[in-house]
Length: 223
Image 1 (tube, rainbow, N blue to C red):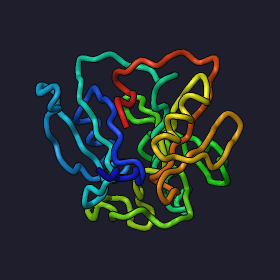
Image 2: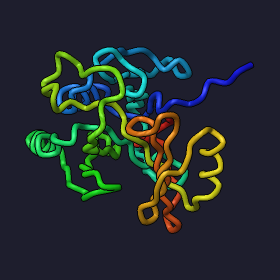
Image 3: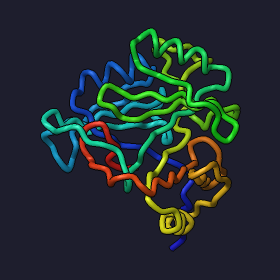
């Protein structure tokens, strides 16, 4: 049986405590489409929310398990620490002003591998980044009914960042999955898969003194 190689990030699933606040933030602030709402089939008492581009393309889908009674988690070792989206290279100022106008704390984190980064968090404290990327969008198209102009719209995932105390073991797993190391930036190691670039990228952040994370509200469940 032939194996289908991994082409990139399909989706990321995180945890929210408040479904309505989650919907408001991702649709009204970030301009993503609420693609569908189902139940979590492993936990039918909880909603499962799907956000993405206009057509729900793979590589654009951020989903949430809604756990209203759960406590706040914290990101750390052994987890996806940050979920990053791609935005057009010329859109950094637009997004900074848009987020500030909605009272969403945001900061410019400087350049990483030559690209500007905006750092923010959603209402549950989930860590997010918007990375100004010069390359073309990876398929799909922005939600046509969004309040964000098409020229500035989020263009799907850029990458996820894995937090680890060490580097070598995770690197071996990624390489087994077809990823290849393409660069280093301090304690950050970058891997691409398939054609590479935005949406096909994983960073491994080595945080030797960090504590292990706790999966609950405001953290990523899986990628």
